[in-house]
Image 1 (spheres, helix red, strand yellow):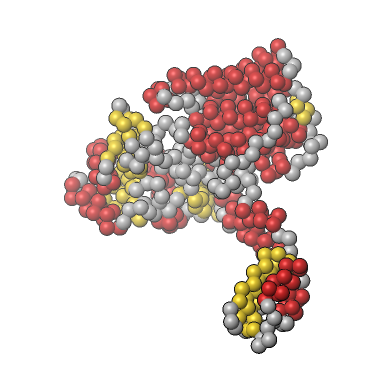
Image 2: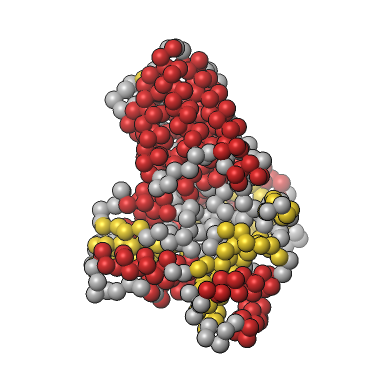
Length: 549
């Protein structure tokens, strides 16, 4: 039987193990475009539970550990893979409800419930993904629970089955077979259950290998890490003008080291500069008078480091919460949009968006990020524009946690989000607006000019890291060496079907001069009936976002 302490340690170890191996999972992404990175998203999702789990005592029932884990993962879910992972753990939590400890049959039932929850949430489940790996692993769990009551054998069966199915995903999806890789989400799931199984079998919690590089909210921040290093309360600094009969400053340094730490005493012919951390700043100042007189510029400074530390934690927490406070509904309709770049944020705000959540490709906001934005919108009904296919599921999970009516529009690109906002009619009701806004964004064609994040292959042609990629409505269309040439070719391709408007949104890595040159080229080469507009989006990752309607 597995108790709450073991399950707690297993999840913590799984989170650390996946963080250590997230790049390995990221590199399995089939397309070479910079994207949400499956390993990173899954790592940040499960990592959200670590701090809460660390606070649980050993006698916590497994049902409570599972519930806390599921709740944390739901709020921390990022990207489609993160949302699916959170749903798997939510189902497991339901299956372990009311239990102090769990055996093979309990886990088999809970895994089955998790898989059902995940499949139910995905509109068009695709086999050969994390869904397949988890489903067949859960089916094996049911079989194993009948034949054994040994936790060791049970989890070995489950993990071995997941590994065997993962290997088969290469043959299940053409894009995986072409790239010669297994499914990234399935790999992430396997890493998690293997790490958990190791703990169940008597192993020790994994150690984090990337301390210097971790920047997500999965683990303690640098600010909180510093808390353990505060031995003395006051940071004391002063400068002295030496007395004519000034003793050897070594004596001052030696004394300060008896009442504090971080002692720095430097001097020249006229000046002594002192820095010390101590609980007795008065004694430090009094001792200094034996060596000289205090200078007014700079004046002596005494700062309470513990209060400073508390303030920094508060600032970090406020920054993490994006500075958003819940707002009481004051109007009928409000809007939340996801976008990255100063220009795009300003554009959505000009169109009436109440809260712009920073995010998009390579930086998928979590369910909690979107929930806070929804609650900060002062409206009874809130439209959410994810503007990225990998954010839609996280937005839909946020709907279940809010206290107001929320409509998530299936916008997959920035141009679709803009079109949806322009179609909003304040005099219409929710149903009518949802229909009209959806019709509007579905008419938009989107082109993206970005770069290859890794070496890959496309239609038999080798793609080198850094090469320019042109995406036609999300699908890789061709590669180029020149950014503007790629943008021109792609716009011409998108505008063939009778377009009237082309909007060129240029990113942070494109100069205004280069963008204007592209606009002029398009205006002169395209039909006279097509109007070409230029917008400084300031977005990362994409050199150009092209909207054609």
